[in-house]
Length: 259
Image 1 (tube, rainbow, N blue to C red):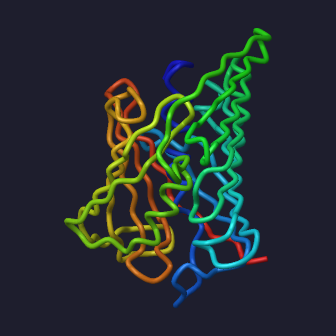
Image 2: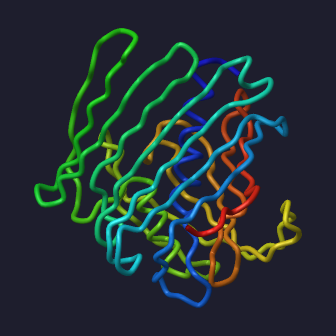
């Protein structure tokens, strides 16, 4: 795995993971108000590669209507860390109906040290990014046109969790990373019994079409397994990328208690 390949693969997958990982209360329809935290183990080609922790904090009111904050921390471990050390932090502020407000990414990956901020101007229908290379002491910036209530990847998949799609159904959600905007297709594919660290779970598998020059140029497939219950808990996420990278898998290790 080269230095240029690990960040692109892991970051994209992790953002998808974080987006769906804030579980709802049993029996609610998007009304959870407690802080939640989830821990994931990360595998690359079946090799332990690192850990991820997601913390989701609603900022008051019903989940689907109020603002919330998602914080994500990713660390490489073991062999992967010796090849290419990763220590990333991502924070997203989501507004009403999970519309994007702003995101901040601090990426410490090998000899790369970059900070990226995206600001969503929903009224002006623009998404703007500023990326700073802290090693080279340089920066780049740009903007893209967006439709109303465009999401970052996290907010878009939070929306998906509230839709309760049945197998065979699809939905398109407007998403932007500040550099590009796209109507991202999400396909509900099938129900599956999935082996997890907590035992066999009844799940529904989704595919999120962000690769192949939709939002990201890289070719690949992103699959997400949510429990087939009121929680819709993300128990597994896999990115299948070209042969040089292979498969990266996130497995839910343990949900933390509410606080």
